[in-house]
Image (cartoon, rainbow, N blue to C red; front, side, top):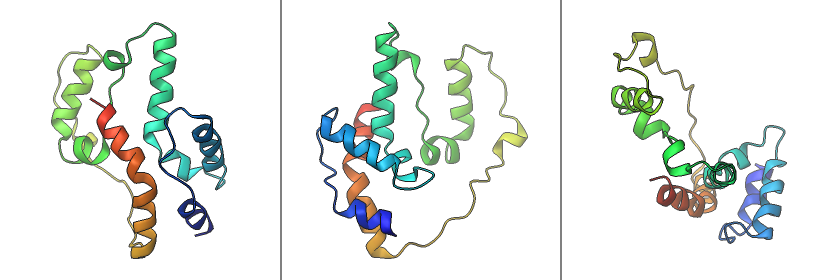
Amino acid sequence: LWAIQEVARLDASLQPGSMEESAAWNMYQGLSSMGWLGKGLYEIQLRRVREAFAFFGKNPTKDILILKFQEDLKENLDDTYSRVLAFLNLKPTPTPEWFNQNDAGTTMDLDPSIRRRLEEFFGPYNRRFNQNDA
């Protein structure tokens, strides 16, 4: 709860790539022993991976396949499996039976005020992620 309260006072509208965002990123990584907050900032992580690919002469748009858990793996598993095989230049095969056994764990009900704070915090990053993942 402390970490969520700390997040609530942070400005999630930091400019992408700014020194302030880098400082906040480092702080987010240290908010818990597992760095759960920073791990949820997919847009920053993806941006850094794309920058590294570009630095080494790769085409991030062509050389990175982004999969979303809910939309791709839970709702469209067979199509996603086919997309992954095609991306890796592997021959098409049916989705293995065992692959369809999703054990993502349990979910918990969040206090509505905590859920709102998290949505407010992650919202700008999630919107940038969704704009940049195509």
